[in-house]
Image 1 (cartoon, rainbow, N blue to C red):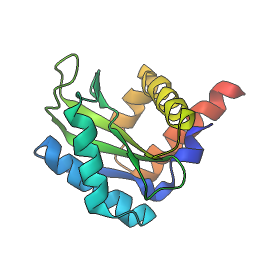
Image 2 (image 1 turned 180 degrees about the horizontal axis):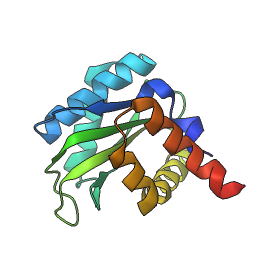
Image 3 (image 1 turned 90 degrees about the vertical axis):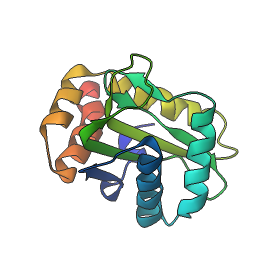
Length: 154
């Protein structure tokens, strides 16, 4: 599994101003609907339900919200960079500005876990995160995220 298989160019955005976690989840749900045709309301409910189990802010300004949905047939990723960091109840209590969301089929089993592990490893790359924070073009962000794994494999 590679990041490129999870993340399409239209699934990467920069959000200029998100004022709450709930608003972020609404924006992610709208992006999922626009990019993949998944009903936004169901995506929002699934994100909020998962977040109620515990925050998905993993530290260092990164959040990995994820949910299972009957409306998807494979694991789908969304990446957003927030221009203004958002309080997120992250494990290190730092605000979040990089968000990589994953949506998996309800019966995804191990594929969902593999995707989470892949994204977690990718986002632990401090050099990559620095580049993501320094770029303001969604196409460049997509290239950085999808090329990082190919560069390591070469």
